[in-house]
Image 1: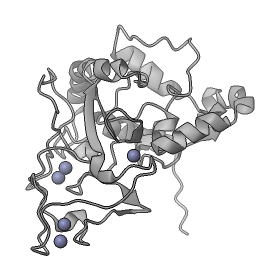
Image 2 (image 1 turned 45 degrees about the vertical axis):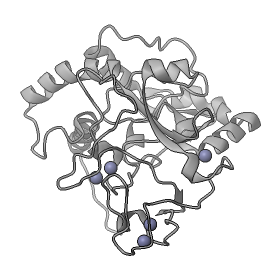
Image 3 (image 1 turned 60 degrees about the vertical axis):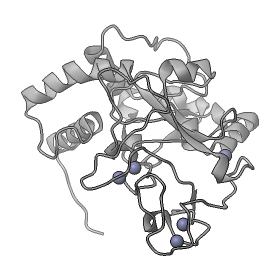
Length: 280
Ligand SMILES: [Zn+2]
Ligand SMILES: [Zn+2]
Ligand SMILES: [Zn+2]
Ligand SMILES: [Zn+2]
Ligand SMILES: [Zn+2]
């Protein structure tokens, strides 16, 4: 494997770019903002983003959240969650709230999670994959005439058929009213339902992990994140001096590249050592 050597300033440039991408998402339309535009973007968008954050989950109404949607989670239309409209200056009051796909040429009218078996999405009863069906409402099959719209026989880990599940989009207040964790206010785009480490597990596995004490592991707190939040979003509601419970553990910076990639699990015993800025 080829080794690439980077100087300290190059590392910083890469870090800055990653940070930029997580904050700006797709909002620059493919052309990097100038430093001035970037500062203006943060000043204008971040307070609104924290205030109006929408949480996206997949589950049976009244049941557990079987899956929480992150920026990289694929929609029925094959595009990622972050490619859908996830922010408004004022959140519409209509429910269910549809998060339309913004990818060019895509006719998806609302983000819809499709469960996966391994890395493959589940198939329809007609044996064809989601992408073989039209992304527009109704999801008729392009490959066969026997299909009356995508429907899978897959049974979720919660024991219920996928056909009784729905993708739920809710505000912070709505999610709190259901007694679900809302995590800290984060400045990143399209965070969906991710609020902490347990968000990355399937719902029933998260419950199991909690019962077995696995959630006594914590994630390396991301110090830069808090300094960024504190500088960008006054007044910030979260009190970082309070201990986080298992549902509001911190994110590591690089987690958002792919929802699982580079997760850093640190046992509680070594947490203090890992907390030093140099370890992050
Ligand atoms: Zn799409
Ligand atoms: Zn979509
Ligand atoms: Zn078909
Ligand atoms: Zn079908
Ligand atoms: Zn389920």
